[in-house]
Image (cartoon, rainbow, N blue to C red; front, side, top):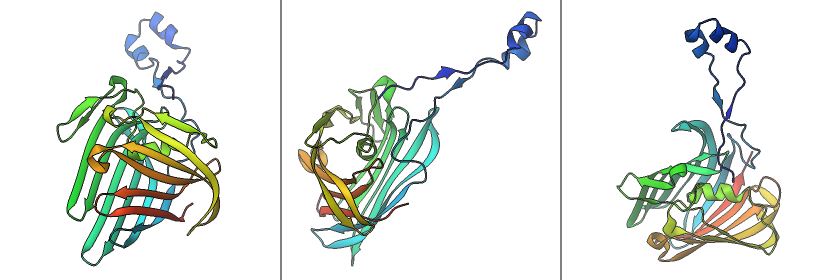
Length: 258
């Protein structure tokens, strides 16, 4: 994706004349303003909200989750979409929850901030990371920091939205060095097949992709995430299957969408 390139707005034609007449104070008020270009068309938009049924295999937990887009919000002067993901599941006293947020610059498809809070039986995980794409670095609230190998970094949530912009050609394998943490690259995406999928929201033509992600802390090496997207221009995630520490396989299936 191209970097954000601000452009200069047109100035009122009278500015030059004002300067010539010795009115610098008034002319200064009419200096060119930097205006961001329009946001390109994306498969997602502010206001999109997807609801999911959740099942965790290891402890037979069931619950509900959602993915939605808020905004716009400004992060260090850049307009962003706020991506949200969250689910809760429970069986008696056993509870599992995951809340994730990503502040995504939709023009360059780069994340500027990432916050995650996971709660599982006998374990928990928290992240709060500021990303600085132009400086190719990131800094965590816990004191960790590092360099990025890309000027368009992504986190685990924004990567799913990024995948919705990828053509996903049949029998293709993609390799992306887009994770903000250099140690977690590359992410490999394989287009497995096109198929028909039935979920709570209905029956859809879908394209199944398999993501292999590097995350030593959570997967002890490599994790696999399988996603069925609608096989259309929206690329709505219909099914998301991944492995969670202790809780086993997590399966999210779409229940409702706009």
